[in-house]
Structures are given as C-alpha cells and as structure tokens.
Length: 362
Image (tube, rainbow, N blue to C red):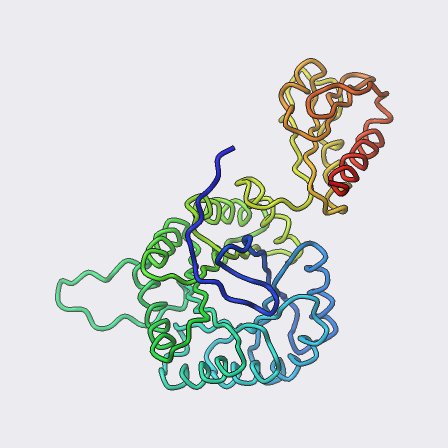
C-alpha cells in the first residue's frame, strides 16, 4: 500500500483539535442556519458532529449573529470558527464571545490597522486565524502598464494571502492557517502548490462554490484529492449546494480513497453487468446505509458473481458474492457460509458485527 508523504506544516490548535503537524487531516463543515438562531445552529452542529465533523464554522454577517456566539460556543460539541467578512468589529465580538478560531478574508478587510487590532486580541486569547482567500472576492488589481498582462488568478490569490500573512508575521503572530479556494480546480491546485512552497503554515483546502451534490462532489473529490495525494492539506471542507450533513461522508470518502483516514464503511461493489442474477444495487445501498450509521471502520464487498466475487474483493473484511437464490458470505476472501437470498442483508450485518467487535477488542 502506497503511503502519501505529507507536507510538514506548523501545527495550530483550534480549541482542542490540532490542525497540521503530525495530526490526522481534520474534517470540518459550515452551518447554513441563521447564526442568530442559536437553537437551530447548535442542532445542526450536533448533527454534523455525529457524522464525524471535527470543527464547525458559522457565518457572522452582523451583530445579531455575533450576539448569539456565546451560547453557540457554550453548547457546541466541537470547536467553533467565526467566518468574518468586511467588518473587523465582528471579529472582535467573536473573539470576546469565546470562538476557537477566526476566518478573515483579505479580499474585503483591506485596512492593515484593522487587521492588526484583530490580531492583538486573537493573540491575547490564543485564537488562531485562517487567512481565507476566495477567488471571487480578490482585492482589486493595481493599474497595469500599457501592454502589461494581468497575473493569473492563482497568483493573485497567493498574493492576497501573503499580504495578510506578512501583517500577522510582523506582529509575531504565527497561529495561522491559510486557504485559497476557487471554483476552477486547476486554479485552486496551482494556488495551493505555490502557498505550500512559500509558507510553513497549515493549509485548509477545498473547492469553493463547487455546485450541487452530484457535480460538486466530483469537483471536490478531484481538487481536494489531487492536493492530498501530493501531501498538501491539513484540514478539508467539502462544499456542496446541499444539506451540510452531505459534506461529511464525502470528505471521509476522499480521505479513505487515499488511505489517509478511515471512518465508517468502505463499500466495494461491482458495477453490475449482464452476468448478475440478483438486484444488486438496492442491496449495496442498504448495506452502505446500515454500516454508515454505525460509523465504524469496516470494508464490505457486495458482489454479483458467485465465482469471482471473493477473489475480486479479497481485501474486504466481509462480503457477499450474490447469485440467483443463494449467495456466498466471505471474510478476508474466504467463503464462510452460503445463505438464501432473503438473508443476504442480515447475514452481512451479523458478520459485520463480529468483525467490528474483533477490531474493538484489539
């Protein structure tokens, strides 16, 4: 099994969660509730945490949202990051409310002295800052000379991040994370490669405004996956236009596909063809749903060929090679019993419980 060599980054602590250094890649998400609605926001954070979300970001667009932060922080099961744009005073209010991290956008908070005011309080309270660049809100370009070509978007993103990073560094502040997100995957990758070369800081990676669940999942998987495969990235957020709960399984699927983290099941399923004699797709979906709820690391194969199934999925903990009327249940590629079609799901569940119990006992 190939091991990815991760870039060495300077660790920061977001509450009790380490990001960077030798920590596992952290999975986070962002609420889409009105932050001013404490009950709805805390409920959503709890739902995300139950799925494995380790840091939750909340939008702070106004003073009403800022006023809700103390209660949200108090009741959140995971560290809370305040997402700040335009008004530095909201960052100060968030820090006073006890948030565990700040995201500042250098594209729309451009006064260095206002940034410094925020940094002073963040340093006093031991709160890290994410310098969060978005391709859609870059600082305006300076005037160009006649015939001069504007720099590429990825370079403008890097320049915007470095502008704010330098302010923080000048103040002796090094509790820094950086993100440079674009919709365009190649632009995002180029920006992260360059910032990874120029700074030692932990990197929060993702694709912004990636799209609906289907298309956004693909865009995130390609962009985030390519960067992670190069060893770039310390924390990830999958962005899709859907319920935030959809983001967490996708994030873990990306990490699991690269052998970086394991949470919940890995489902190995054949793509189906004219040889199968069982309705395999609904069975695979039911198997995935069951083991996803358990949240335990286990690899389950659902195959539609009695002859080749165990061999093709020999790396699985358990699996089924389903045939017409009967199926072979196997563990680690070895058939352990044959069951009737009506018992396919229950037999897999039973074997899965045994494997999970064995793993838990060491």
